[in-house]
Length: 279
Image (cartoon, rainbow, N blue to C red; front, top):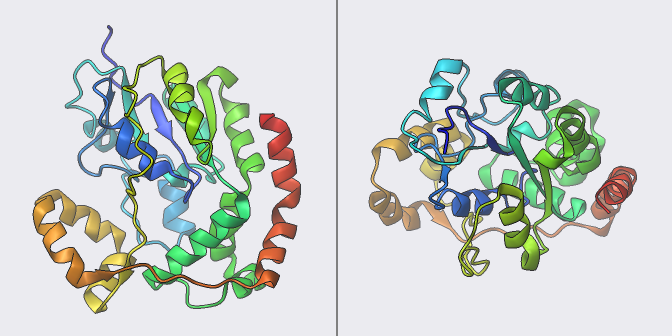
């Protein structure tokens, strides 16, 4: 097998749709290489957009050589994987990825768009980034950056189409994360690699919804670039040991019927178009 020297498998999101779970499993496959630091959310092809328009204090790589160095320890794996959900709504990312490696394969995850938006706001609330009700972010034009996260990331037709326009359709796989019975078969066929019968264990919860207990954990939640660096140097057993002192079980937010209705009205046109596109 000819050695792959550039990333050629991209998990681009959408956020809160199971991309972290998929990445956590695929990186274990012997034919797939994933970097050790940062493990995911590399954000190379969306760096400028995040720098200018995101309220997340993200970790990102801006230089091509630094990006390629993440994959220098790969050997004869069939795929080199970059999992960065910020690529989903970045208008330029699909064209940049295609120019970088036109043979790349793209995986897009989706779920019910309203539930995805609620989950995204709930995450930001736990992190201390969203201090207002969801309805305020949906209706106040001054809070556009939040609107983009909650609404645009649920506009699967608009942003999937950017990838469909940039890549041959055979290089794109769009997956409903709730369709768990067929995920293994679809990904196996798409990547032309085999999985063991129990490779995808959906009883596992990879990306738990933790709520920070104190100022230290709130700081870490809000400054993901720092936690990314810490994970490079701290053994996982140390991180696991201190985690109970920093985080508690998730906080469940009750959303009103009015908020759900606003979301439905904002997303119905795109959702209808998306369902027609993938049917």
